[in-house]
Length: 439
Image (cartoon, rainbow, N blue to C red):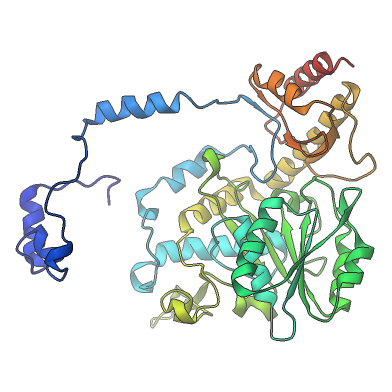
């Protein structure tokens, strides 16, 4: 299979004849003559490959490419081993369609099975699907998994990424599901407010850990309170952080979700990304999307198949409990290749560098005049600072090729550091901040 397969007019006519058509217009023979367009479309003539390349390169040149990045908020600049691109670039893996025919799809099914295994090991859960569109979609789907006839209300922490909350609300609006936001206090979920909101009609609590502000939540206490009220806990997690923090399985989450972009997917102008989902054994039959299982064939040899779900999840859409259908296998393959290349020690090293460099950056920015917004909170690799004029500061950094943190309401900035940031560039950024802020 090639990335680009041309064919001649003669070959096209041969294919039409094989399908029982006399020409291209015969493809539309069932369409009423009155609605067919007779005149050609008003489109310019096609251009050569060289002309198209020049035009696209000219458009791309308008983009601002930052060499130094201190912004996260859901998409992170991580090192990607070269082997990830090599494996994901193989033409064998580029078939996008669903691997329903197991007898001719063993390769892609095995890659999905290995991805699911990796996600289960990373999250401490018992079952994973083959990935969904992105982390926000995964969170919304997980909340839907937890609903039943008696429990129909969703609680979402105010310390969750606003983009995730927005998608949850969009999902819930069409199903007439109430969504209540739990207030945050000093950068984390207000547990007392949560306990008051945990009424008998609550199906689940959606918590992000580390949360949107980078702070670590009291996940074990929250998990205990949620389960005591008869509800379920959906934990939205950063996959890199799981190399050093307790897994969702360890603190009793019912469903673990998150954005898989840090696992070997480039920033890529915002996508395509990968939402991962994992659950305990009691919830695994409610997982949306595809699930690959390992079995044996008629000769007793190891084989892989789609399992645990009815066909309506993918084909008979009117009876499905989820709208997830598209194939995320190529993004999942990248994630699996990344985790295999990094290994447990590599993932831990990346996580340790992320958190140590973020703490160093916070201290340097504090010296430069940006006070931490949550001084006494533990955090992973993101943190919030106060800033009287965020626009002026971020513009000054941008002029030096530095993408500063994300501006937040109330004169605050959300900063991020990963293993890609060096001490030299953090010191340089701090010196520029001091110059602009006059500290």
